[in-house]
Image (tube, rainbow, N blue to C red):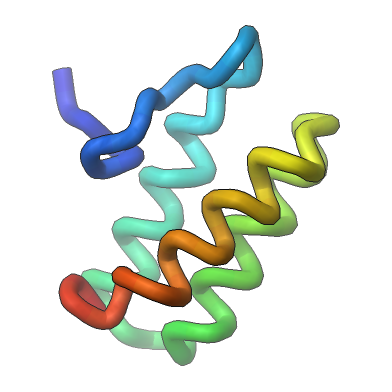
Length: 70
């Protein structure tokens, strides 16, 4: 099983975010959109799952450390 949310749980207190992370990984890998756009897209996806706190937390994490993988 792939760890889509690299070193972070794919499900967090009942909110499955694996598809959001999978899309974010794809965005980073292919570089068709900017890193900021990819990170904002991740935030929006998680927010739509009714988890604003987790979306914000993940956004800060990828902004701080995502440059290593973009």
